[in-house]
Image (cartoon, rainbow, N blue to C red; front, side, top):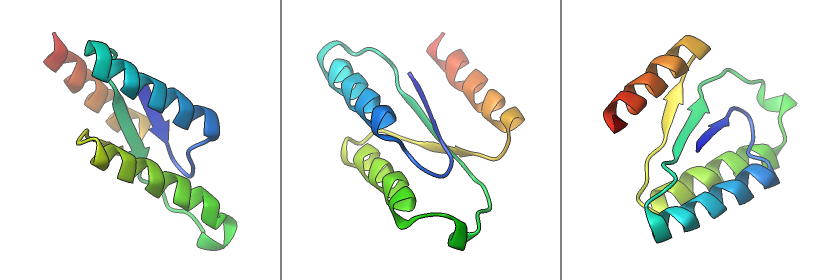
Length: 89
């Protein structure tokens, strides 16, 4: 499972993440890769709840002692995914 987030984490993304975590604890699958985009945002153009959704997911990932990463561009993301996939093989 690949989770990508930039300015918020929606309800369904969070639910799918929790389902995948539960399944992972039971079976060791699916592998979960979570990436947060490093982006410049105008703080006046984003709601507090959006930032809280990002922080909440990061905290949850830390709580389950998993990992998350950041990416700057689609090229950066592809490189990071390729690296992770090669590690799995």
